Length: 394
Image (cartoon, rainbow, N blue to C red; front, side, top):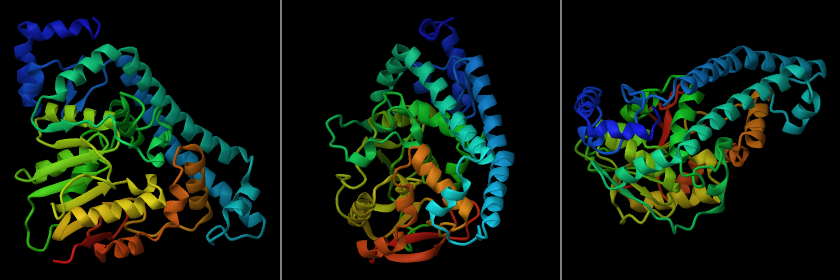
């Protein structure tokens, strides 16, 4: 049975069983009543991949990633350290990246580790793209049916003027966040694979939402997530603060379109909009909390300053700004292997601003934007003891 023919199921008595199952799993009955492509159902909040062979491929890629991230990465680190020590260099010191590359180039252990990580990434995107583009009519019809449904709302701005930094194929995701109509679909399943199954139920995003600090007065009426991608953190924030108005914005129209569809499927009222974090169009002093997750390392230094300035404008006096990214909880590592991985990520994994971000004085930029900065806010990322947070002086 093809996905296109499966639509007829929702006109039969099977629809009643589907609605009951979706409601039991926490998915909205409203979503079950409209066109909703779920060929293989859901596991909790995870909509299963539509074919068993595709799911099996991603299970394999997940296991392969675990091996690459574990044994192969440890072998590559040990090899880099050994090669540098053989040249009388200390791999724990702050060596120039050119020196590291000079003495480690063309080593088969290091190259195999890097190539294997990249292959897992490419295979993940390729299999997903083939599925969604190969069945584009079904998936586009599903999104069109969800665009004006609720709960929550969707605002698309196809004429938005995008900064150059947003046009890159971040994580080598084909089309990036703005150039592929199925960017949100691919991002969700691709990052589930990247997290090797540890976020299939949005566990990481739920953890982040639960550690988010509150304003001193405890007032939380409006929350904004910048760079929401497919909306996982925004949904988790609404579930933690059910009485708050939660917004998720992203420059990628396909991202927020998918985010809205997924939140509506889950029955969670979040408002998604295709807007820029540096030009959000919200009123002054509007939000009690503004946050984001792993966004700033994908933004140019000029863009970071603009986003922080806009955040200061739209945060209300006494409000909290809580950015979550690499190095917002600990400084970048200076070891040779860490510097090699950052260089490799920038060069081969579509992270053009990674090195600039590692050298960027983020806390200083927050101060420059006018925030009162606390470097010892609650820890957000694993392995950190704190995370920087800003407040707008009341």
